[in-house]
Image (tube, rainbow, N blue to C red):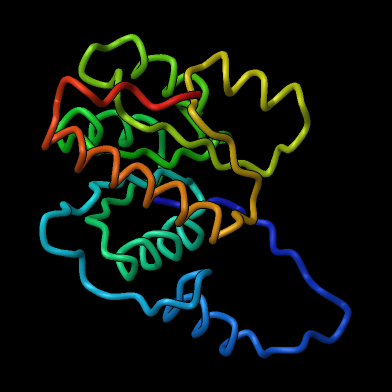
Length: 181
């Protein structure tokens, strides 16, 4: 399978930390300074599906999500994402918008029309940041829309809230509702 052409962003200004120091910091601490660790007793791991035709981006994000303690599957196109979503029933789908064959908008729309994905958290990840694309994402059924590069602390916070919501819904099914859009 040919790899998608991924755009790289370059920074011409010197940065305070080296790339390795920054990655090490992100992988080993949370925004509040607490170290990463195993999933606490009584909380389940999130099942996360990452779909992006840029294999390097998908694999990098999947690695980080695994280090955060989630069960992660990765696919590289829309049809494979649909099949994996149907088979694996993830709690969260992180979908690139501009995938060939079946883009993220159409995939989200198809999944939202199925009862089994009503409570699934759908997150768009895209290089498109304008209001038209964001609105189109909302119309397709996405709960959240992240512009690439993803703000990692915001993503982790969102995933931690979803994990807490699902943990609470297991304890008290009638009291916990659908995620807000």
